[in-house]
Image 1 (tube, rainbow, N blue to C red):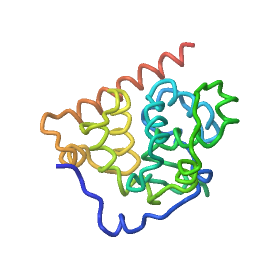
Image 2: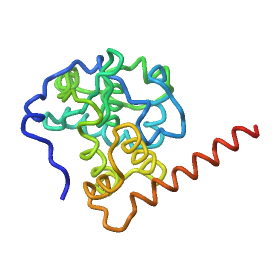
Image 3: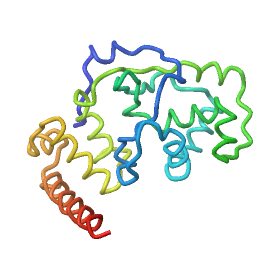
Length: 203
């Protein structure tokens, strides 16, 4: 069963101007790119090319932003970083900012109505530390309906274990892993990182 968000957490949803929100360079999908918070254009361009953001653009053009689809945001260094919902934020930015589409050479014959544009100006967000919703995000993307690739999954398990101090067995139990997949992914990621470090050392 998927981890549930507490009623208290859900009650903290508020509207935030989309322009205040930043794409997450620590998104596990981007782990191998080694980007920083300053690389917003590169993150947006990568998501557009690799993660079917166009499907979300089409959906928003038809019906605006879905008010029940909150973004989860972490306040880091005084900035609001989206830790869950980066594809949605990317779609919003592209629809709201023709100049960004031009700058990134992203072409689309899009003519959003004023009603659609109004729905995108402010987005529903929940502000919380990454450590508070690691289980929700992990379940959704490790074995849920929107899975990451294997490297992204392993990188996320490594981050939760090392940064948040969550034991591997607790991660496995929380995510419903009964086949030691979490432990194997964690160990495999350590091997991968060692190999990559050795390769860099020889370069």
